[in-house]
Image (cartoon, rainbow over all chains, first blue to last red):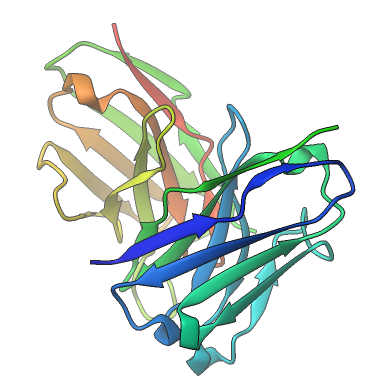
Length: 118
Length: 111
């Protein structure tokens, strides 16, 4: 069974930093693309960024709204995906989801809440 | 970026009656491998999105057969043959052919 468990969310002041993690199980982690998707309160879903897999050289891609502020990393030996967020803005307040893809199927975690507020 | 446009924004439906949601992409979603990475998600308040349909018309494990997906190229449709109370919530289309983008969502509520 594919499982994705996010952690690390919390309350942070504008301009602050936060790191999120996603621990995966139930599939060969190094084979998979891994994405971060977020959802602001009362809003729709927004793709944040991606790490491709080992076969595709772990390329990282980011949405324009977070490029230069957010950094995705992964540790395949630990089946973990990470999102480092700096210079956080109020508009970054959202639930952040970890997503992986297997044969066209998107598997989602339960999400972790990030609140940016003074 | 591929823009996904969903209609309607809101859909009041009668229990037991059908419902339909449309999704149009700004460019073809046919990938270089020949597959079309168009999915449909359902989200209830306070819960994560739940996958219903992947690659246009494939129902995910455990999804009732009253849900069906169809379409090709740039035009796609999700149909619910008979709406049940648990079907209320917001439905999103999602493409993963080129990066990932989402439709704006369609809120399904009971009349």
